[in-house]
Figure 1 (tube, rainbow over the protein chains, first blue to last red):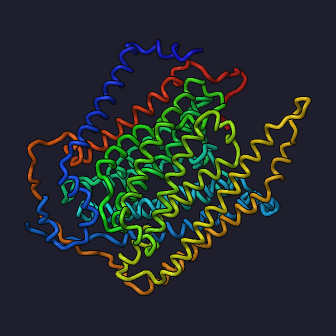
Figure 2: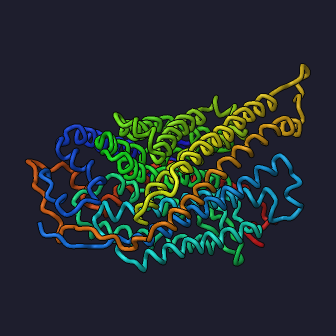
Figure 3: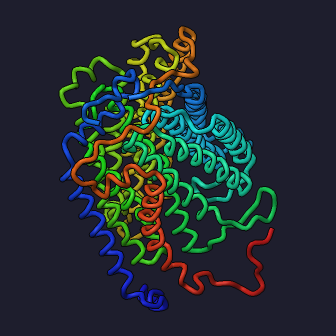
Length: 65
Length: 532
C-alpha cells in the first residue's frame, strides 16, 4: 500500500500541507525578521539577565530598563 | 524602585545536586560492570539480576533519568529562581518533586533488576511507575510555571524557554508512548503493535535524547556558561533562532532509528529533518563557544570553564555525527554496531556528564558560601574524565567499523566469511579498552564526590539566600512598537502552548499515517494476544 491511500481517507487533506507550509513559513520568517530587527539595547539588557541576579537592589535601576 | 527582600531556596538545589552526584556514580558503576561483562562474561555469575540484559536498562535508566534527571532539576531550581527573581512557588511541591523522583528511581532499579520490563528502550518501567512519573512530572511543571507567573522580571530569559519546552514535550512523549494495557501489577502490553509500536517508541526514544538530554541542558548552558565566564551569551538573537528551530526539527527525527527495518520507506524519509538539525545544533554550540571569545585565558585557569568547553564541544561533535548516522549509506555501516554506543557516549559522557560536573563545581561552593576544597582535584578530574571519554569512544569506533566490515565479508562462493561469534571475539580487546575508559571516567567522578564532600565540610549551606527584588514587576519603558515575539517572551503559558503546537505538529504528521492503516498486524483467530 502506498502512503497516498492512507491520506486519501482524510477529508480535505489537500489543504493540510498548504496550511502547514504557510504557518511555518510565516512563523520562521516573522521570527527571523524580529530577531534581526531587535533593538540593540534590548538585546544587551536581556542577555545580561543571568549576570545580574546576585547584585544588590541597585541593579534594578538599570538605565536600559 | 521599591524593593523587597526575598529568599531563594538553596536547600532543594543542594538535594538535587547531591542526588545527581550519587546516582551518577551508581549509574556509571553499573555501566562499568556491564562493560566488564563484555570482556569477562563469567562476571554475570549466572545470577539473573546481574546478567547483561538486566544491567543494561538499569545503566541507561540510571544515567538518563537519575543522573541527568537530577542534574536538570538541580540546574532548573537554581537558575529559575534567579532568572525570575522569585522563590520557587511552593516548597512543598519542591519537596514532593524531589522525594517522588528519588522513590521512582529506587522503584525503577528494583523492578528492572527483578526482571520487570515493558521491553521498550528507555521506557522499560512498568505501568504503576509510569503513572508515578506522570504525577511527579506534573508537580514539577506546576511548581515551575507558577514560579514563572509570579516572577519579578519582565522578560523570560531563553534558558526558561528551553525548560518550558522540555517540560511539555517530555509530558507528551511519556504519556503517548506509555499507553499500555495492564494485565497484572507489573505486567502490561503496549497499546500499539507492529510498525506503529516501533514508530511511537522511536518517536519517544529519540526525543528522550532530544528533550531530556539536550533541550534542558541547553537551557542550563544558556544560564551557567555566561555565569561561569561572567559575560553574556555571545548572541541572544542566535539563541532565539536556536530555540525555535531546534524544537521544531528535533521532534521529527525519530524514524532514523528505524532505517532498514519494516517501517515503510516513505516514513524513513523523515530523516531529512535529522540532517537539517545540524544547523540549529551547531548554532547552539557556536553560541556557547563564542561566549568565551576573548576569555580563553580564563579557560586555562578555571576548571569549571574547561568542563563546559569540553561539554559544548562534545555536543557539537555528537550533533554532527547524529545527522550523518541518519544518512542511509552511513547508517548501513553503523547500524547495530558499537559505533552507535560510542556516539551516544560522546553525548552522554561529554555533553551531559561534563556540563553536570561543571555546574556542580560552580554551584556547590556558592550555595555553601565557600570555595571548592581543591582546584588540583578539579583539574585531575577534568583530565582523567577527558581521557576516559577518549579511551571509551575511540576503541568502540574501531570496534564498530570492524564489526561492520566483518559482517559484510563474503567468500568467493558468496558465503558469509565469519561466524557471528568471531566478530565478537575479534573486538574483545576494544571492549577491554572501553571498560578502562569507563573506569577512568568513574574515577574522575569519585574524585569529584570526595572534593565536594570536603568542600561541603568547610562551608555551611545558605539554605535561604537573600535577594533584593522589586515589589512589583518593574514598568517597562515601552519602545515605539512591541514585536510579537516580545509578547510571547513575557507570557509563560502562551510559550508553553506555542512549544506544544510546534512539537505536536511534527509528532502528529510523523505518527498519524501509520495509525490510519486498518490492520498492520496479521492476527490468527486461535491466538488471543495481550493475555498473560
